[in-house]
Image (cartoon, rainbow, N blue to C red; front, side):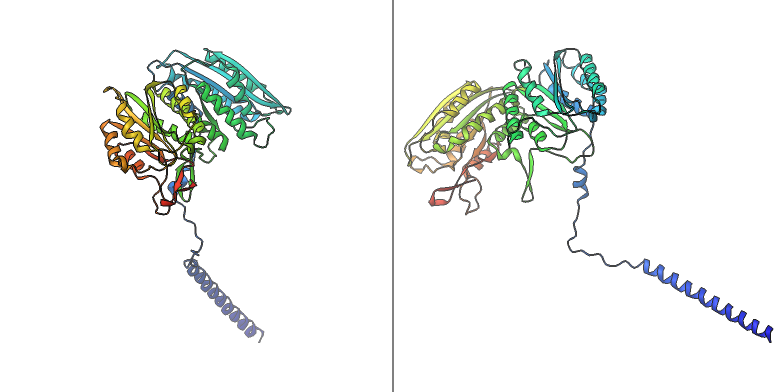
Length: 477
């Protein structure tokens, strides 16, 4: 009986084990099947990323390549250029690796310069904070790059745990005030820092104020700021507004460009929102067309509304001269000034032929303004009086903040003015006014067409008067 009971228990256990094994197999199969069925993805609020855009935002840092690019830009135009380079280096402990790279890669810069010139020299400014106290050291001009390497090595070896990043903006001011600059030489400043630029100035808008002073000094001494640094707005703007260039100091940064901003999904050039930036942009476009000899004549609106644009225009002229000088362009300036009595009086058009010095042009920009304006009169009556020599290109730059007034009483039309410009073989750039925004006409028809038909460019003047048809001007852009 016991034997029979044991046999029954054994048989029952075997059945239970087989059933359990079958259940496990079924469960495994079910899990495998469910793994192949993915739940539907939620598409609501899904963000699509353009892989190419992400790739474009990645920057690769290479100090040697940056130095070579600076050297190429410094020597690209003149046959036997004179090159002055000032290194402005952050001497903090955290910069040790960068300074080692700089010491090693100076030869990359020399490899570009030496085949093109033997007239080059260097200066060096270091800035750091030691135990919380600012320290700046200026090494005056030298023709010995080995001396610069040795000075960099000394800065690096002297840095210890109490040496932090200093005040880079103040170091720039010191260099611009203390160094002697050679005339007609575009001096290249090369700033290297892996920290944000600071100043000891204590005003609420200290960075903006000292930055404007730095930019003014750069324009005065024909200095271009090249910054191998951080993705910081002030660094990018200093480089942008002095015709220099920004480079990343390490590869972990986002790309930054002071010139470009995003507005309503459209990428636009930030410089085009400033009068001085427009002048520089026109100069760069003109240089890119590679003229041999050129007369640049401003057709300048002398009406009262232009009062606030004159100083920015003078700053823009300085930037234009810097671009032309760096490119080795053979240029001459002239100016056609125009104004009229308030209420549609007769036009006054004054033509001053080239050559004019930049300071003479700026003086004419700044003279007292009066009354109204008639642009067509200035073009039709003024341009034929220039009589540009056949071996020189003529470039006209119209500068006005108002739309073109109609002059049918004198038989002056937009078509006739355009014919005058084309007959003079002129390329026309326009920094101009705006007609009615209600009709969607963003920009003046004549001003747009004359630029287009002469292969120039058309821009709207920042702060331009906006006309609303018969109602007159009542808004500013």
